[in-house]
Picture 1 (cartoon, rainbow, N blue to C red):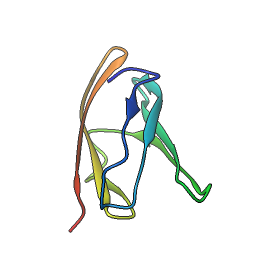
Picture 2: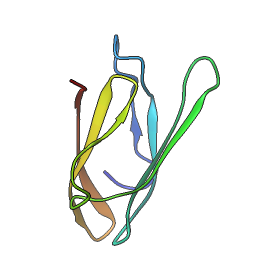
Picture 3: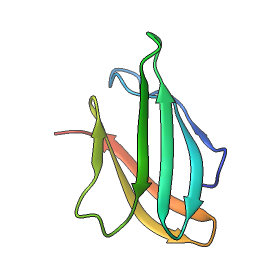
Length: 78
């Protein structure tokens, strides 16, 4: 994923849609505004941060960053 990529809302998981607002060597920034207007920001997400970040019922893991492209995995939180 690159800057500007939109990740659709995950039906039934009460999170998203997400927008990738930055990808760099420092990490990946994601933002989300839900239907109620609540804003979430995940800043500086990195593959080596020790585990995924969780927003409501969605976990987001950064698997790799190469240049201005990141590989993310979104999955239901446990």
